[in-house]
Image 1 (cartoon, rainbow, N blue to C red):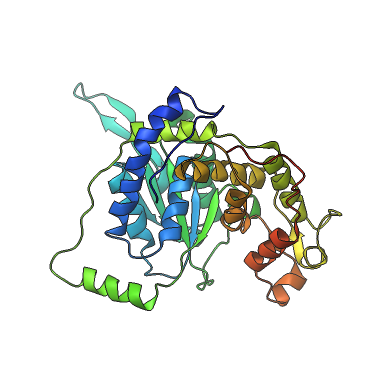
Image 2: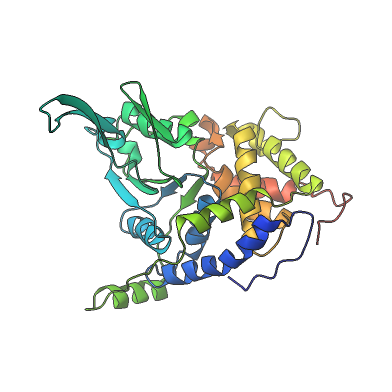
Length: 347
């Protein structure tokens, strides 16, 4: 990340001025993560954007690519509490959210005491979420949405910040319970974790099979992170960027006149308002991380795939033809006018 140089604009406030001091810390966070995580710069950037936007992430990739290590390293560098749950078919909701237990106090009286589950953490990794039963999935996804859990009629607030990074394996389909469409939509991003390159694989081997392995140090804390999360909300979105985003979302919907022939032929349903909200908010975070107080069209275009790939579903024809949603999204971007007659972005 290059050194940021903010310009004063209508969006600048005391909050964002304070946040400038923390951006250098965010740069150090990325440098610290790179000491442990080899490659995957794009994945790390998207994870940080999601964290700044208080959004949950669905990670998809084969086992052994460092997804667990990434989340643990992110938690360590931000001095946040980390937990991990391996989802299995016999996992129960209480194994995640916690349960009430009968405890005996010093007076020999018996009382119900709440024992919090692993969801009471700042960063929670849900490994292979699609292996748990729908009932257990729903318990986690409710906690993600409400940021509270209810046990025996009593509500318990989750820690702040609270971010779930859930993984699913794209290859192993037997014994899985695919997430319902409405629940997948609750994830802010869907990030694809790819195999390392040859040089990256060599570096991984050199770093991990020796005596000394890299250890990260805390760089930022929860207070600094909260400041940055608030500052993201203040980034300016020019009207023409909002209009472009709205047209882009509608272009993913097959029943719209603006949809392309391929979208109408292969798409079952497209992205909706939640997709638009996620895309704009993510673009705000990307702009701020780049040292800008305003969102550009490039910010939107760079974040279309992680924001929308899980919000666009193929129909039978699309599945049988092997249509790739990311390719379809790129086609939509290429065919969508940017409407340059609108005012230029704030500089």
